Image 1: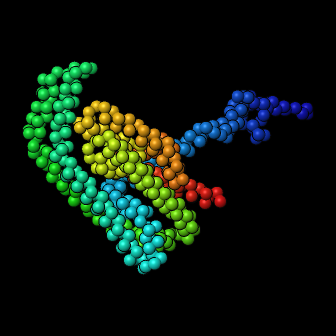
Image 2: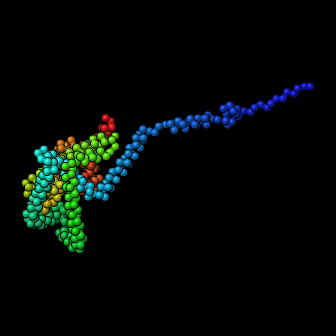
Image 3: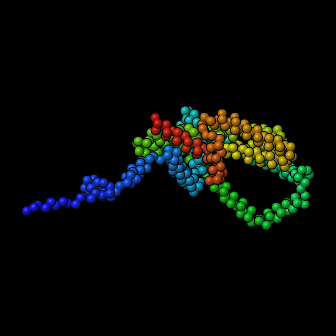
Length: 390
């Protein structure tokens, strides 16, 4: 009996060349498909460009800082009377704390604070009384000179190079008079609202004086109490940052007062020599306006130029305008670098942007507090960074 040889059919391999169960998938794997997972893994592992990573990091940090600054200004705008009173109290403490400390060496501290505040109030009241007396004494002559000056300006505008029509100028004056007479109720309500603002100003001044008493007497103890409420790990850094902020704020306050006083003295002497009326009140206006860096002094001198134009003519007004340029150069290139550089290390462009931003956010008050606020924030940042790196 013959044995039949049974042959099995040949095992068919998948197109990929490897049988099932031996590492094959049963499907063809072209080189492109085999390289695709590796390419995807390599793409996932490729780092982001350093410039883009840096820009993204700065972008979200700027957004956070902008949101925090907006929140601070929103809170200050909502409670601007309280914020302004605290600011005035800090300014008074920065100015009066050194003399109070000197008096405290020979008398009790409470009595030293009281004597310092009383003497300061007497000096401020005397200056205001002097200005009021000067204005009251020169007011009738000033009104007459203004009328003559306005007629002089009108005739000057009618001549070369302007050649304005006299009827047009008279028409402008009549329109101004008609507007004031027709809007008398609006003017009256504005005056009444101004009286209400005077009450608000007096309230803020009284609250600022009340706060300054405690800041001068026991401001260091209040700060130590605040630091004691913080977690123990951050007390030292917060205390150092607070000391740096106070040094910067006191330095800025002393520096800006010195700059304002120097500007006021120069303006008062120059206006007195030029024979411009109200030299003392205009010098006081220059002193107050100098607290707004880069902007306040030219505005105050612009008012002086208008007074000089109406009372002394265009030549004296031109000299006052030249005085604006000279004092601006002295303030920008001599006083600020010498007096303020050791306390406020800010670029002039940063100062200008801070003043404009503060004015947009909170008006005149914002323009006044913007530079010290930015300076204090920068000093706190520097102190914290030094504590981190040290």
